[in-house]
Amino acid sequence: MTPNDDIRDLYQDVILDHSKHPRNFRAIEKANHTAVGHNPLCGDQLTLYMEMDENSLIKDVSFKGSGCAISTASASMMTEMLKGKTETEAKRLFDYFHAICTNNPSASETGLSEDDTDHLKAIAGVKDYPMRVKCATLAWHTLIAAIKNETKVTTE
Ligand code: ZN
Image 1: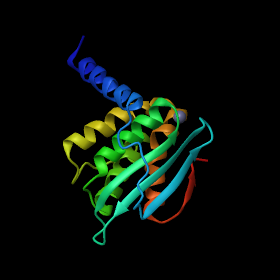
Image 2: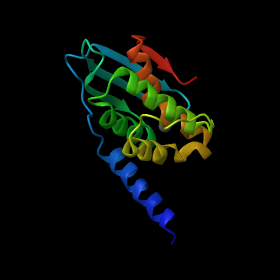
Image 3: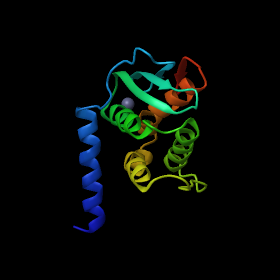
Image 4: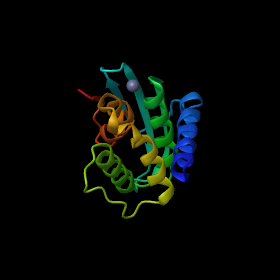
């Protein structure tokens, strides 16, 4: 077994753990940004809740819904990543994640923490399965919709 296999196994464990025990799986009563995301290809559905302060700082973020293991793990890991970040930082993470999921060479890690990029790379491992990319990116598309105050988003 090569060291790379070890790392891949480690992150598969992390993804599995998040899918079985999703973090921040609750509604936020004081949420001032919410959106519903739907991935009809797989049947994933989630509602994203976000409390953002006047300085565009994400004070709290959570989700509820039902979906496959990948969509649940991705949403769970995303909420852990976003707490305490600004809207600009959140969009930068989305751009990076979207780029690596679509093999876009313009993906830039500038301004991102290694911990965050490692987690995003782990989920982006699904990029070889185009159907699963929609599962992995659903939470992120829903986040962007919530930031823009669009209430509904679909991967179609
Ligand atoms: Zn799915």
